[in-house]
Length: 171
Image (cartoon, rainbow, N blue to C red; front, top):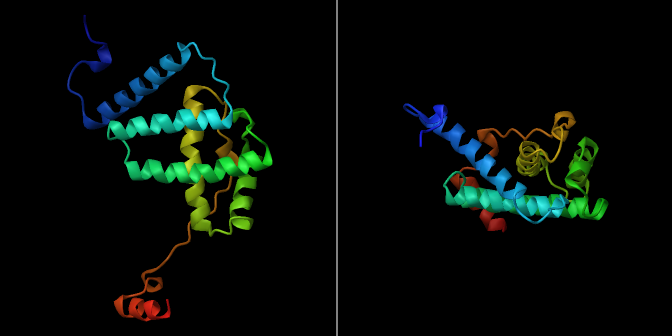
């Protein structure tokens, strides 16, 4: 058995990463394509498949467990928003209007600042990218979404040790 041409010769670290990602995606596609279960691509099912994929990346040390747990928590906010607004819709129904409404929901209902809204969207974007790679959606709805920029904090905004002690006395 001979190796494919792309696997012959020395592999750089970057090239190994690219090939690993390619074969992971191919494996996941084949697993889904050849399973006897016809998966309806509702948001809840897609999030489940996506989170399983992310957890596998922890096993291969491509992602940290902390990152995956944080994304899982942030995706719960997104899922709650979608379920309250639309129900368990098809992933194809998530468009730029829905994502803009999610920004409004985070700001007006959850009452979080622009940095947190930015971070919440940064956890939804890999889900969308995953669906694009799988071919489950045709185009990236984030292309037309204006995600709030994180608040830029200067060092002057961070309390020093003495200021922290004073703050603690008030708590």
